[in-house]
Amino acid sequence: MREIGHFIGGKHVAGTSGRISKVYNPATGEMQATVALASVEEIRAAVENAKAAQPKWAATNPQRRARVFFKFVELLNKNMDELATLLSKEHGKTVEDSKGDVIRGLEVCEFVCGIPHLQKGEFTEGAGPAIDMYSIRQPVGIGAGITPFNFPAMIPMWMFAPAIACGNAFILKPSERDPSVPLRLAELMIEAGLPAGILNVVNGDKAAVDAILTDPDIAAVSFVGSTPIARYVYGTAAMNGKRAQCFGGAKNHMIIMPDADMDQAVNALMGAGYGSAGERCMAVSVAVPVGEDTANRLVEKLVPKIESLRIGPYTDDKADLGPLVTKDAYNRVTGLIDRGVEEGAKLVVDGRGFKLQGYEDGYFVGGTLFDHVKPEMDIYKTEIFGPVLSVVRAKNYEEALDLPMKHEYGNGVAIYTRDGDAARDFASRINIGMIGVNVPIPVPLAYHSFGGWKASSFGDLNQHGTDSIKFWTRTKTITARWPSGIKDGAEFVMPTMK
Ligand code: NAD
Image (cartoon, rainbow, N blue to C red; front, side, top):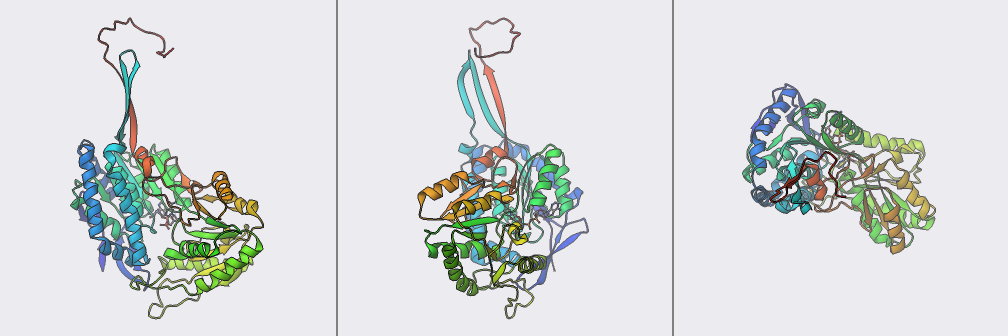
């Protein structure tokens, strides 16, 4: 059995804590590896390596730091098939979808190739008599990232690429459910020329996370995962004096206006609702058709498409979606479908009985559709994180707008309409971080920033874009005077510009 350890100081090391977690192939239900769960001492070893390597890396000029990422991007492209297959084998998503996971991370690496420009400071000449004032962005020192299972390539890269490009060292604590790709990324970073100790990958669970959150040498923590843990990580990191950005769960709505192009809206819902088996924080899990006629037309068109979804293992290159990640996830999702039935929602397509010949022990759930879901139901309030779409019928636009506005989460939302006025009003009034207008999964590109509102995000700076450069650096402002010819006496009052 393969034993997955850690990557510390530029090399693979075996775990020493004696604690492990099991890694499964979600398509077959077979255990395929064990992963070591780090102790406090192992986190400390990673921090010591990071501490030793970081000053020299921070002093490396930004063009040279950028060149590591130019090379890394090249290596990601060269190894794309291998990375995507490795990812699918542990996560379960289709290989094409895994390529998307790698590419969305790669795009952030491309973005940080511009670090010489991105990290430039500000300068004011003549801020006072013979005074110049300038601000510089220095790395925070050692950053840490704690990542979820659903994007094991993209989210680690969203974190470590800007952090490292800014001159920090980094400790990555990936999800214990699919740990192989993050380790492979660390190997490729070394191949790209990154000095040993700058990127360390330490596998683990709560014990490793707590060791990170209380380590005195880690200055900033980025977290992506479920909301209860995001809230915990944010609070604990802040209490320990660390900068933190923590991104949580979601319940993303798509509003379908009566004038929407229905075929376009239905196709968008299929991809955004069922792609990756619904295990995306930007998946659409609630469709809100406006008016009875829109709702009837929507459901009528959705049903045959859901029934003909092709569900398969990652080795089936024609599959639309794969299994859920673990048996626990399977039990949770099917349990929530049971709950929806109990609550009185109309189960139009039931994915619970889905079985794939030859893969009977895999964690497959078929595409599921609920109609007549009400806001007070648990299946509406809870993030299901599975291939389950709920239709909540709204009488009019205001009622539709009210649903995502009042929901606990605020990650993404979309509106389908041909009415520019409605789209503009919607984008302006909604209290959600990422808005799609006729775009179902509005994940901003690498040079804009990603982040939700409300219970989907804790902290004030987003992932990637210029926010990430701010998050992984500290501003230092220097006021310098070279007073040749100026002869002042002592000043005892507060200097002002009056
Ligand atoms: P999770 O919260 O279970 O795990 C995330 C990370 O936290 C993992 O590294 C895990 O080891 C660690 N962790 C788990 N329990 C912990 C505990 N008690 N104390 C400390 N650390 C702990 O999330 P997941 O199931 O891996 O990922 C799915 C969730 O992530 C969904 O809620 C999804 O919406 C969310 N997500 C959000 C975004 C976003 O950008 N908002 C992106 C992707 C995923």
